[in-house]
Every structure is written in structure tokens, then in C-alpha cells.
Image 1 (cartoon, helix red, strand yellow):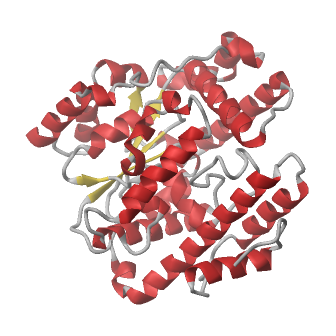
Image 2: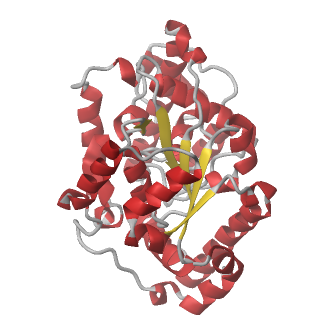
Image 3: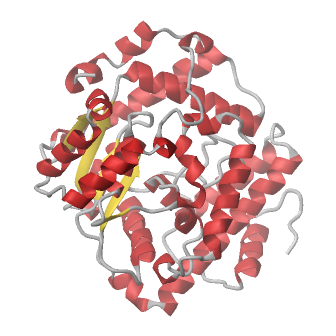
Length: 387
């Protein structure tokens, strides 16, 4: 089904139904987000026609993916009965070592972490797939195409060189519910576009669990090892759905975190929009929004819960295995000899070195702010977590 250059929502929904050969989108999804996104794409002339067409194709594929997920629930009723128990969830600002820590925790044979290929194409349930499932190669092609459109991004996040097997963040789950700003291939939908509507926190995590049920159906029971950069902002909803979750909060100097994230933001903004607003004004507004998010997280009484294990980036980088051991001890879990050996091999492998694609560099001067400005803005956070 061919879409017009600027389709309306009914045309997009019909295209998704035609692509999937299915019609039931299910209930409790953020339809308003779709309306917002289509309104943006149709009205913003800074979006080129080629990019707009690619974005609409991605939207249709995401909606077709949702149709397939709903159909799987009918075809495999056991999905609804899957139990997600006591997951380990790493959280914290991006660039705080969350991926590094997550990767080491995922080396535990008792754990299971979601990979890009299965998150991007979760139907049929991935645990029913063969070892050579074509979705893995499709995932490799996705990543190769995406990185080709954003030169230099592999330096920032070298883990993408694992292609379809790269570990994915929890935020990517929500694309099928249109309730988050993170489409799987952000180079097609303009980065930072404020289109996703807020949903209540409990509903957000009920869908999160719904998605994990899909990924684990048909396989042996294993504990989930997960990672997301926004869980700390939704602790009430997270705890409502996962009261037994083992939460690990990574912390790093805000000067290093925000500087690196700014470089990422501008890199992706240039790649998707082809322009940026006034750099200094954009930066200050961007930092204030992060500060407001952090205020919301720190004001939640659950943020002071002693059940949360806090990890400092300097400790992680100086003694990675010891840090994971301390995390496990915090939750009363053993680090088995096999897990420790696998972490040692992972750390020794040159293919896992953080600078394997070059050193990621940035300068705060390029964004019209100073180290002192960021340090002062996040002074209470630095003191509270000793970063």
C-alpha cells in the first residue's frame, strides 16, 4: 500500500494493517502520540521529503509490529502467563557507565538481556526462533544503515558494533506503545521531537512487563538483566509493577555526563534535522530540563530507598569485577566462578575496549557553557552521590 507524501492518521493505520495482514491494534496504547507525530511531520518544513517518507515508513512498520504482537497474544495464550520476577535493572543518566555495567551483569549465565534484533522484530516470540533466525541479519543491516547515516556515532557508543546482538535499553520497548520519544532507528524520525504523550507510570511499566513476557515466552526461565536511562524518573511506577526489582543506580560527575550527552544530542540533531537552534540558548534550556527531571527523581521518597544499590563511575572503571561483586552482595546474590571468569574474558577482549573505534571527545566551549556552570547546577547531586 503506497502512502501519499503527507498521509493522515487513518491512511497510516490502514497501511500498517495492510503490511501486517492484521487489523487489531489492541487497547491501551497512546494513539494521541501518533496524532502528534503525524501533525509534526506534515507541518514542519525543515523535514525533507525523503526523510519524511522514511519516517512514515518506520511508523507504519512500528504499527505493523504492534499488530503482530497483539496477534501473538491470541496465537500463544501462554505469553500472558509468563512471570517476570526480580529483574536486575541498571539505571542512571546516559554516559554514566550504564551500558558497561549492564554488559558485565549480562555475562552471568543466570541472566538474560534483550538484544537489538529481538526488540526490533519481536514477533514471533524470539525464544521460538532458530539460532540463524533471519531477524538477526536484518538487525545487523539496520545498525549498519543507521551508523552509516551518523558518521562518528560509533565512537560514542562502540557497543553498536555488535549489530543485531547489541544489548538494548528498556526505552526501546515503548516504541510499540507510542509512549516514549525513542524510536528504534532515531535517524528516521527527527531526534528530540516532542511527540509522545505522557502516560501514567504504572501503565508504562505494565507495558514494559507485557513486552518482556513476549521476549521470554518459549524459553527457559532466566532472570532479566535490564538497563534504561530514565527508570530513575519513574520509580513509583517501576516499583508498582516490579516490587521485587533489584535496582542499580549508576552515578558519574555531571560535568562529564552532560558534556558527553550534549555532544550526542548535537550529533543526532544535525543528522536528523540538518540544523540546530542557537547553541548557547539550546544548551542552557537542555540543561535546565535535565535538572528538572533530576529534581523529580530525587524528590521521590523511593530514591532514598536503601534497597537501591548505588554505583560510582570511578569505582566501576577502576575495579569492574569488584563493583559487580558488590552489586550482587547488596542483593544477596552469588557471583559464580563462571560469571567471574566470563567477566574477566569480556574485559580482556580487545573487541570490548571502549576506545576500539577511537576516543570520544567533546568541548563544553562549543556549547556556550563552562564546567563551573554545570557543576554548580548539579551541586546537590554531586554531594549526595560523591561524584
